[in-house]
Image (cartoon, rainbow, N blue to C red):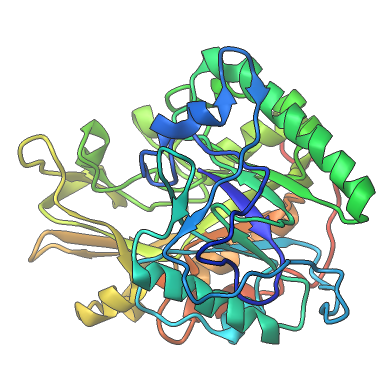
Length: 415
């Protein structure tokens, strides 16, 4: 998914107006939404050329069109945060979006909007549209230069590109894409006196060679920051990786063929290769992962990672359970076990052979410390609306003073 960042103001579309925008789409939307069939209408990978067109919105009747600018007379005070705190909002979670949440973020991303074959855009559901309108309305009360990021929009602050399952053979054309965007943004910067942002998401490193599809040095010439997909190292997947239960985003630890399955290994790869730690943000998952039919320890003495019995070659469980859903299922999250080596929390119930892993105050504190000690750019959250009703994880992230001090830009990893 290629997301477009937009600044805060009023409602966002008109039912009949044609909206002329400069727009990029992805090969594959976030969490495999499957938009690859339309990318060729926008970007020709055989030539590496970017095109522009005029899509229209469907399902926006009764909503006023507006122009989105941060440098208006009502622009908010500059944020004092020296780190990126990037929060995603999904269309499916029921938890309300609040000003209290938004005040703790530097960027808020709403995912997603669908594109039809003819370039017209629409929300998947009426609930998704109303949730985005709620997000936009509540940003008016936020006392900072919060950037609201949307999958597809007009009059934007920049774009965030997530190309999932890219291939190494596409590397050259991907760089051409970034170069084209940067060239056009530089022209807009001069024309509008406004700095437009380019960010991308990169995969975990040295697992199945996903990182080889990207030329990191050239990429950094064109982007402002990079969100690293440093989570989902374990999950109840419907493939061979589902046979092991463990933390979604362990800071450290890894065993056997999965010794690289941790945040530190991936971040060390990218930072040592680039020598630019402040360009990278790590993931903080705000969801729990549940496995059923969990059996013995992965190795004697290692409780945090366990074997899973598969059914028809698939793990049973819930890969993305909101914290509200976990509480409703009567999981006592305060009774989690802490694994010092992984810096992760989990609950293992041998009587029911169930295993739950999730972030809590202690694991978030460890991640904040890791970001600051290693001079990283910040964090990105999937997703803010998967937190509990008290915003416990977001509050923990904020109370750890991630934004309190700036950090250096030199790598501290042993490269």
